[in-house]
Image (tube, rainbow, N blue to C red; front, side, top):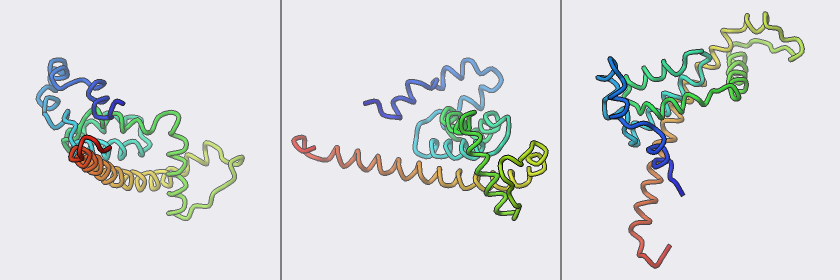
Length: 168
C-alpha cells in the first residue's frame, strides 16, 4: 500500500524542477521549507489551505500560495488543501457559512422558494461573517488535527519497529 507521504513525493514536483522553471520567483520558491514534507510544514500548509478554501473568493489559490510562502508552509500541499472548496463543495460550504452568519447576526431566513438573487445579494455580510468564522476555526482545527495524526502515525511506526519480528 502506498503511504500518503510516498504518494505526494511521486505526484508533486521537487524543489529543483520548480527552481529551474521559476524565473524571477526563484529566490522564494527555492526555499527548502516550501517543499519539505515534514510535520510542521504540512500542518501549516493544510491550515493555510483550509483558511483560504472557506472564504468565498475567486482567487483563493494565489492568496494561499502567498500566505504559504510567508508562513513557510509546503506549497503543493497548500494547493491541494485549497481545493477543498471546488465546484462540487462550494454550495454546502458557503451555504453553511451563510447559515452560521445569519445565526450570528440574527437574520431571519426565508424559505428556499422565496430566495432571489437580489435577496442573496443583500445578505453578503451574513455570508462573510459565517465564512470568516468557519475559516479561522477550520485553519486552527486542521493544523492541530494534522499535527496530532502525524504524531500518532510516527509513534505507531516506532512501536511497530521495536516489536520482535515474529509478532505482528
